[in-house]
Every structure is written in structure tokens, then in C-alpha cells.
Length: 371
Image 1 (cartoon, rainbow, N blue to C red):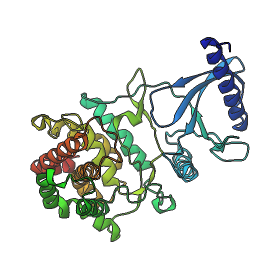
Image 2: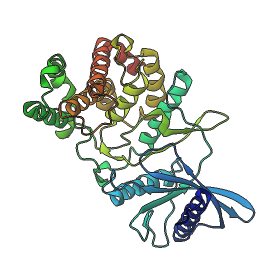
Image 3: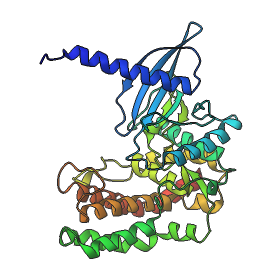
């Protein structure tokens, strides 16, 4: 048996992938001639390729993405949500990703092997995984605020709820209580202090979920992953270009998009910091984000929504603490962990952050009013 040289295997893989990507491009009716591709490795869920075409002598780059259907169980519903939202924004002259349509008129396709694909333009840009500069933080806030403002006149109930009860804090608590009662891996005895703290915070943390279920707030289009690295920035001016990663777009409360953003960006420590003395809520970062965000949405959200933004930050933080502790008690079945106590450390970090938000609550309310 003769061994196949490594370069031969690599060339064969490239040839197969080239053929597959060409077929994808043809079904999306892309203009020009396929030139080359390179796989992008900055994501860990979907398979993403930057694909180059020559159109009348000019180079054009696209993003071809194969969705991981083990993670996203209902990709058609996701793409239908995305189509409704992006079409609405683009029709108003706003900035949004453009997803190409196939010859069948859909913004997605299934390949011969059942793979699920979509195509957008490649946008030359830069992203920030973390932000210390308040001007950049304000721009992140403005980008997510503009996203919400452009969709303020869109009926969020028209979208699929692709992740049921994603930001339903009351539901998260109910699931958590059931897991604690079952104590499947015998860890409840190790988290008595955390359980007591979460029980003390429960009524206040669930307030928005209860009011939303009662119809007190409009059903908004929410992004549900409002991290800084989901905003593309111009490489030269560092101004925001567009909000990306729309897979979690669905109906919800605007306060949780705001709250989840500041929960992440205003934490003075990493999300899994074990030294809780390093964990606090940065007021100046909050001020910067709030100025950018509220500057865009102040005429689009109701007074009740604006008055509840700080409660959204508190609730989103407690909710994540519940989710981390739930997973710890349940035996680490959801979040990836690097060591046995990882989820417990994460939960303690979020609890500390939530308690600091409570400590600074009136200051944060004043900032929102100033904005």
C-alpha cells in the first residue's frame, strides 16, 4: 500500500471545496467568475469562507457560511427572521447585512448533502473583543441603539422565537429550582451561599419578565447577543458600520439587549474571574454606552422602557448567574468548562457584578435620565 503524500490530500480537499463553493455561488446567482477562497477561523460554531470573485476586472469578496445544524436546529426560521429584519432596515435606507437570494428566491439553500448555506458581502472592517476606550464604547452603544431604532416600527411578534424563553428570567429561575431539588450530581451542598443570594434577588430580577408576560412592554425585535465584537467598525475612522451575527434575532424586550451589553462591557474583570475583588461595574463605561444607545432610541422606546434600562442590566446579570449555577448543579451539561468549578466561578462573578449594580443603582438611573 502506497502512502498518499500530504500535499496530495490537501490539494484534493481544496479541489472538492472549490467545486462545492462554485456550486453554491451559482445557486445564489453571484456575478462574475469564481477565483479562490480561504477558510475563516474566527468562529467556532459555523463554517465560514471568504470567497473571491472577478467581476469585469474588479475583485469582489463574499462570505459563504455553512450553518451548524447541530447547534441551530431551525435554520430556516432563523433565516426567515433575518430576511424580515434586514429587509425592513434596508428599505428604510439603514445599514444592515445584505443576504443574497438564490434562484428560488430564498436567502438560504440546502446543498446536496443537506448542508445549510447563506451568502453575504464581505465587509472590510475591524472588531473589538473588549473595549477600554469610552468613545468606542459609545459607538458600540450607538450601533445597537440604531439597530433598535430602525426596527422600532416593526412588529416583533411577526418573528419566530428561535430560542424559547431565552431572556425569560422567571422561567430560568423555575428551571433552576427544579435542578436544585433534583441535585443530580450532589453539588447543591457546595452552593448554599449562592442559593441564598439568588433567592434574595429573585423577585426583583424577575420583575421585567413578569411585566412583559402581562403585556406591559412592547414586543420588540431584539438582537440577543449585544457584545462589542458583533459591531463592525471602519478601519480608518473607527465609526460603526453595521451590526452582525443576527442568528439570535427574535421577539423580546429592548431592556435585555441593553442590559446584556452593559453587563459584558462594564465588567472590570473577565466573565470567569475567580478573584471577586477585581469584579465591579464600571460607571464611566456605562455612561459611555448609555449615551450612544439612548441617543439613538430616546424617541423610539417608551418611557417605561427607558426607565427600566438599569433594571434590564441587573436582571440580565442575575439571569446569567442563574444559568451558570444551574449548569454547575446539573453537572456542566451546557456551557463548556475548563475545570470542575468553572461554572461556579462564573456564577459567583455574575452575582458579584449584580450586587454592585444594585449598590450603584441610583447613580445609573441618574445617568439614564441625563442621557
